Length: 516
Image (tube, rainbow, N blue to C red; front, side, top):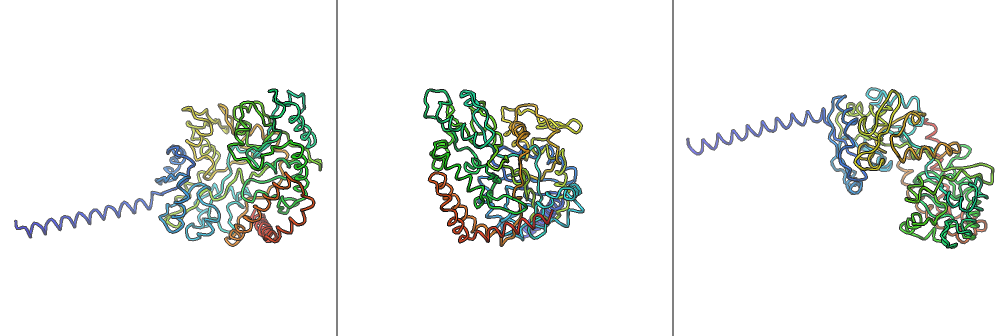
């Protein structure tokens, strides 16, 4: 056979092979686009891939789809998110409210699709929830009236978020009763300062009130009604049906005056506004306890090995005769944008049929603690959270074996009463603390939605307003002068755009309430 003819045959064979390869590849791509969905999620740490083993993957098989999980570490996500929003390759969906902020979604309208038209056909569970729970409906609805992301309501979450803890051993050492009013509280702090409360022979090493892991000023002033929220514009609250910026309220001013008085008497850590986190932690977890009272999530999370000396401080009665706590369930226990579908998704219906299965009691408990047989068990209508294995803490074990805080979930009121714990668990301890204090929860500023224009304006205004509030707050607590400087303080806030800031908050609040 001549070389020319041989070359032609080989060329033809290669071409046929290439065409066959292209044909197979096209077939695989078509199959993939019909049945395989790429779902990206952001994880705080590299805990492996067990988080989607069990319920998430099994639910996908039930609706006839395959999942390709893209697990992104939070440390890498900032850079990756910028690339994605600038036009990079998109997965079919992102799972978890830590993936995108409302600003990300609002400012990149072409990247995320509206889900309104799919809910009736593909999401019967979620549709029923929106019809029965006005809060979930409001959280699903963005400022333009469309649904771009699916919300969640987490199981086994408390009404009370951070709270105050007091050293009960010190109270016993000094023969003191637990304080119940703000004046009794000040008297206890004074005794802590003057009477060697920790009993180590040094009458000068006690810090009656110290910096913890929550807002040191707002928590100290709680008896005056400074019921701060969770995050972002956390200094907003609602009174008589209207949004209120706490640092412009009379309750804030009176609370600051009282805190300054206590500071001058040496009842508050003199370094409370100047120390770094390492100094704070060293004081909170000193071998011999030196901090009498501080705010935090639980005693063990705040005081470490000394936790057994601390108990929850009751809700102190303030000068108006009422007791207050910090409570913001819509920011702590609910979330917006837990699942968003991108413009790359060719058939959102199948994907949403899968995610609709997340909106049941069974799914929610499994996606918070781990699938049945791994992190949880079910007995009739009741659930047990299993003891962690492999030497992990209960919290870490839950993060390894579930989606934990992120992803769609929903449980009705009263669900927590049907959950028990087979071992020590921080959630169980927090829920126990919640039993007494939740009765004092007041209305909090809700998790509202903003337009793109509002978000842009708020980003500018709040940066200046927050910085000014923080600087004056520290000065007033340590040096005094709140009464004399109050009018000029309000004037300065107004010059910074405070009235426009509050108008945006009021408009967003009214739209949120109308969407319920």
